[in-house]
Image 1 (cartoon, rainbow over the protein chains, first blue to last red):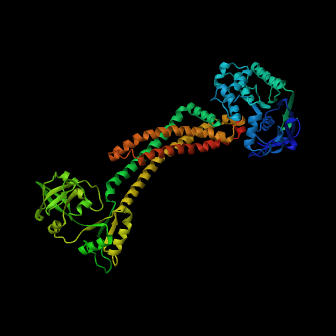
Image 2 (cartoon, chains in turn cyan, red; image 1 turned 120 degrees about the horizontal axis):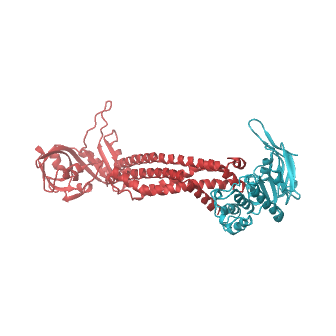
Image 3 (cartoon, rainbow over the protein chains, first blue to last red; image 1 turned 180 degrees about the vertical axis):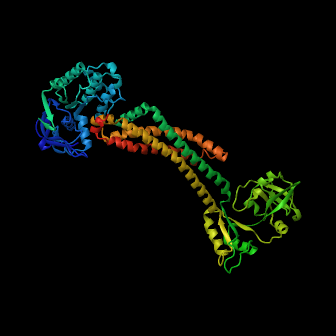
Length: 233
Length: 388
């Protein structure tokens, strides 16, 4: 992947949206999911994205996560314009600099907790000699060692989400993208997970962007972005 | 190292759905066993025929032309004169030319009556064409050599006497070695007498055919052309048949039959391939969300493709290996049933069908896995993540 910095992407921000539009062509007519959105996110920010269903929250998160590219406008991630990037380069960007935390945890059912954490690290380094590092990351999530050899189906929701966070962190990404990270957890476990994310932001300087419906969860963020009908309000 | 991880993932998925994997493997086993068994049977058939015919593959047979009467033309003679034989001898020189009388007659052996073929040959020519098993070659004018099958069927031994009615009788001086089916003469089912005796007994002056033994197989075409030029200059007097060409035609025909049966066997492999395609598509559909997750956390398209291809490869590898091993039993069984012998089973040209079968099994599995793997690798990660 080229390391050239786009002049439009220059600056102190880690994520920059400039007049970003995302249109989905559908048989019934084009759907504008994001309409000329401009936004700057600095290193170490903790952002909550809120808005009603269908407002464009997920589209915004997908674009930040390089799972999709804008129809128009400039989207810079770590100083690089992702518009026009190849699928291979976008995948490398996701693997090396972005960590994903999902509402449904999305651990790989065939792998144990430790192997789930190993997976992205092997993708990045090509080496399987990384068990120790994975153990350290899992330990930092307050997970009992006895669970490391368990499959996801043998763990509780909270335990699975901790493993998912460990998986997101194992490649030491600069940005963590969380889609309703407590949506499938009870209040107590949700709070514990949010404390964990808060610590990662405060102690390790991770930039966290989180989509949530829950105002009490949004309170952990430094800034709340509200989005309605594809526009930031 | 990525490859090892993806291979391991594929392996675990095959194990997780062990029943359907087993059924797909079973399909490949059946396909490979069928294709290999048919191939071995066909090859054994060709080898068996080749073995029984190859002893006569070095001859040119000259027979009187039997093309019938043309408009205004005269019918050719049904026999070859001494002059014809001499002309053939000169055209074929330095190769050995053997004129042959042949006919059939009722014979009485002891108290049993039978009918058999009688060949009249010059005593000097007999060792060139035939091998003696018991007794000796012809010496006197009233002796006879008997074909192996004829001797066995009629319990004829050296010293036995065969009566040919008014033509007289002959004493058996030798039993011939079994020669197998031939395009020139078939003495296994008859007797061979001295040419002069035959002339007298049958009252026949002219020959039925001339056999030219060509020592150098590469010269067959040349000798054949030479005889044809000499004898058929103005009109077609004789038919010149090259036994090697007949042999090759027969072997090619059997080879084609063998290929056809192998292709029929291949259909079962295609069915197995469709079954792999089916279970792989099922596997992709079941794992759409998982594909979305691994793509979102940094797995390349080509790596997803590889992971699914490994699954097809594992199924193919297990199925083909077991199928290859069982093919030996299958080949043994069909050879025993169809040919009553397994002597052609462990020859390289038969065993190579196991390699082909295993190769086709693997190839079919991989080809069947291609589309599902391609489909998986081209899934949109966002849509895949949304899939429930």
